Structures are given as C-alpha cells and as structure tokens.
Length: 128
Image (cartoon, rainbow, N blue to C red):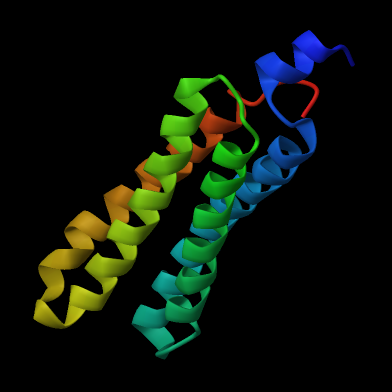
C-alpha cells in the first residue's frame, strides 16, 4: 500500500476494527428488537445490559474511526451520529418509567439506527 493511499483512507487496521464494531452494533439492534419483544411477554431478558454493550461498541467504533485519521468526513460524521443515536436510545429507555409513549419513539429510532449502520458500512474503504 502506498503512502498516498494510507494518507487518503487513514489507518486501515483501525478502520477494519471500526467496521467490525459497526457490524456488531447493527446485529445488536436486531438482537435488542427480539429481546424487547420477549421482555413484553416474559419479563426481563437482559435487554438493558445488551443495550449497554451496544452503546460501548458504538462509541468505541466512533473513536476508532476518528483515531484512524481518515479524510472521509462523512464516515466520521456517521460514526459520531451512530454513537449519539445509541446514547439517545439508552436515555429514552431509562425514561421508560415515565410512560408507554417512549416506545413510540424508541422502536422507530432503533430501525433508523440499523439502517444508518448498514449505510455506514458502505462508506468504509475497500481495503479496510
């Protein structure tokens, strides 16, 4: 890999791990959806702890994207946006004690997060 390619795309190893993190967060959104439905019928199934894991992985992915030194400002923005969406989701879930209206925001935001993560996977350079 030439120096020009390294400068333009950033550190490929960090971006590779960030891509795996984004893949993990997308999968966690679907796992959390299933857990949320199960929580309605059978009680606590670890939905909150899995959400904490997703929040940590999304923040770590955003940090890796920024640390890679990539010049792709859209990828940086999307990484920060995904981490912010996880933080917002976690905050909404903690507000769940205020009423059932939170689910009407919580569920569509989860769908948007999954779509955002899948769109974000296309932004990663091919060598990462």
